[in-house]
Length: 408
Image (cartoon, rainbow, N blue to C red; front, side, top):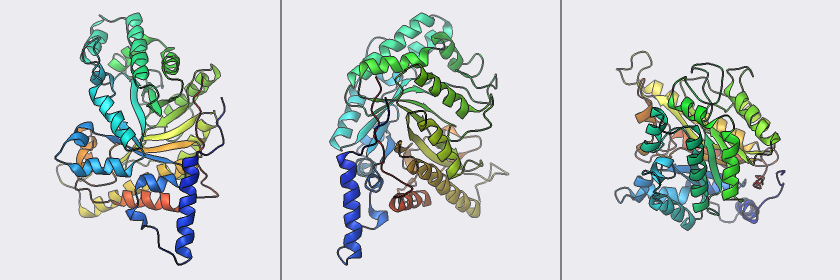
């Protein structure tokens, strides 16, 4: 099924409205709101792009921080649940589902006219304890795990049928070049839960996961989602992006209903990272296969301590430089997405440092400050850069998004 070159009425309306606003201002009429006062969802809509965030369900529901809830509701046009749709949350007891938190999440999104990225159906991590234990101690064998996964995907996708825009059907299924063995493969370190999960399911589980999801919902867009695939390397056995590209190419050749590739976009300013054109090239090569792309979990973290002595806080000059580097990384990913008409959405993995996952995960050395707003909801250079990029984006290089039609 090919991508359709057509824009929705909503996208056209957004573009027309933006054009009229510009004309009105230039003709001496009322000026449109200042760029920094416009929502990210409104700025992105000028090009048909959806701008989203991952949502901490507890923070959203809590009465102690109404600003968080208000900003989720007003700033973003698509939302991703951080945890409430993961297997451990939905089926904590084998055979018994708890849909409460996930249903509430979807209902809130519908009320705010937001699309939902469902996260995640197939992943070796954040499994319920009964399943992790069964995999580790051998009480759940390959055929049993396959049957459990089939049932899980079918039950979850059918439960939310018609309510999810994009599903992360398979998440982080391949290894990293620093693992053993170093050649990229399905799984992870030898003996790890990630490798056991892949071995028990067998090499065909990725294709089957997409088939099972499609059978449960013919209209949701089905994505493979992973990190460190923002740019190609040397194309050799340690090139993760090349491996994922080859995987998607095989799936497409086999008629597997994969609709898109999600590049997570977790970056760190202590590394060299990429330029706009390198990322744009990677996105283009994926969309040339006939799939859509999305930036799905963007943040750009920095060292919070002195690089030479982690016992000391970073100097002000270092923090300032890292703040600017973080903004540049956001710029690179967003510009690359805007340059590809098949890049459907740009999602940040949390928007305020107050609830960021980064400090709890990256402790040696300590890292943080990866979001668009700081912990007190003050705008950062990253936010202003994103707002400026969205405001300045337009023809002829940036074209309206091309909506994706789910494959059968």
